[in-house]
Image 1 (tube, helix red, strand yellow):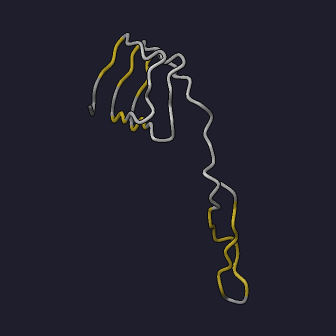
Image 2: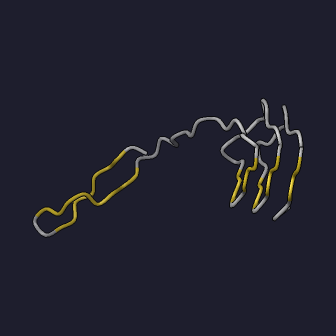
Length: 82
């Protein structure tokens, strides 16, 4: 539900593994032991007096390509870890 407002809501121990929140506002909510996965999204959300315990970000084990320098007039790409 886009642009929803949640006030004094308890998401404790909730399965939010594929939840998609867009433009939501969370006021005085709790997220203790809630399940988050990489499919859980919070786009343009605000958290007022609310601190979700998100897991640390993870690398997807795919190298990123970045332009680093030019050699003999040709761009040389170097793989960098994410």
